[in-house]
Length: 396
Ligand SMILES: *[C@@H]1O[C@H](CO)[C@@H](O)[C@H](O)[C@H]1NC(C)=O
Ligand SMILES: *[C@@H]1O[C@H](CO)[C@@H](O)[C@H](O)[C@H]1NC(C)=O
Ligand SMILES: *[C@@H]1O[C@H](CO)[C@@H](O)[C@H](O)[C@H]1NC(C)=O
Ligand SMILES: *[C@@H]1O[C@H](CO)[C@@H](O)[C@H](O)[C@H]1NC(C)=O
Ligand SMILES: *[C@@H]1O[C@H](CO)[C@@H](O)[C@H](O)[C@H]1NC(C)=O
Ligand SMILES: *[C@@H]1O[C@H](CO)[C@@H](O)[C@H](O)[C@H]1NC(C)=O
Image (cartoon, rainbow, N blue to C red):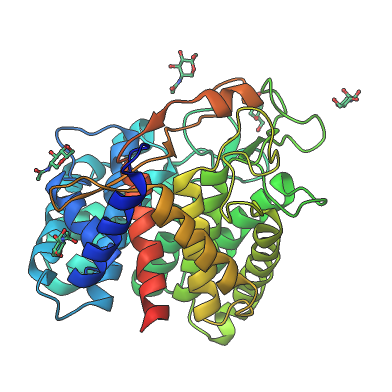
């Protein structure tokens, strides 16, 4: 937990640790109730592109918490916040053409939460919304190779979109469009493959932020179209996409090739993440492939996403338990001690999260390390809550 520097720092630090321990408050619960106190993940008005991602990511963290803590005293509060968050997205996503114009692939992050609420309530407005989201995939422009654009930038595809696209595409097809193998597994796996081929660096095994299939962008590599740097959070989204989609692909003949491909990539990427961890702190840099370079720093949202992916992947048997689990535990402890803030009024804060980094920029090293830092960014807090849930399973 972060505490102010100064004479009392170590005392305060010990005090906060002891209180948290005696209270037996789990960090997942504490962060999630803190997010509720900030009304996180609830769209007000039309909500911009990133508001939809924040909503979907909040819903996912909360849903995971409910699965893991079904009889907790906070269950009703957390379930009703999921519903409030999902309901706030319905109007924004129910027109496929509008949503494809106004928001990147991240809009799909709310899809599985809409499906789950529909299955529970049979409220048709949920179905209208997730049908529109599914239709919006068909409306999304593609580059010459068939790669979905991430947003309005012609022919550019980003790692980021996969965390929202792949799990929704998969669950929707499985439940409502089973005959369409063109969608899943084929197109879903193809989107991941294109990013893998264009963005992966053979030397490090890490993937850069995105690529321009027409190689026109100022940052595009003239051979692969790839952008120059490995941005932590975008690779965090991609690693979560792999582990979360693997979990949704039934272990049947129909999906055996898809599972094989995703598993191979997840193993390869996890090994690369273990190699890329900063040996001093145990966590990951804002720009993973430029360790120690001037201006670079340990970033809190990407680090939490990798921690989650490694712990969950190891627990579900997708990767060998070690060294991934030990690496992730060390990262988690660094995060708790350096980024988690006791705000002193029973709520938790979270520091060290970079604001959005876009390829609609120079995509230079300076661009990535000079982006502003955010306090209590939902992308950081919801990632931390998910990492905490995995850590808490280990503790049992
Ligand atoms: C995007 O790719 C298409 C080919 O599919 C090409 O005709 C077009 O010029 C590209 N657009 C830009 C802005 O590079
Ligand atoms: C199947 O999925 C593909 C890819 O998403 C889509 O283009 C096509 O329209 C779908 N086919 C049917 C019959 O829904
Ligand atoms: C491609 O980029 C490399 C590295 O920047 C450069 O050395 C090479 O000349 C470029 N090739 C072409 C065909 O532009
Ligand atoms: C708790 O403290 C933080 C930091 O001072 C403040 O922003 C927030 O509004 C407070 N929350 C509540 C519920 O009092
Ligand atoms: C004690 O537990 C409650 C309920 O989860 C939590 O809101 C509160 O922040 C905790 N207080 C401390 C000091 O740990
Ligand atoms: C892309 O960047 C340009 C230049 O900074 C800016 O004017 C434009 O609004 C950006 N486009 C989007 C969709 O954010």
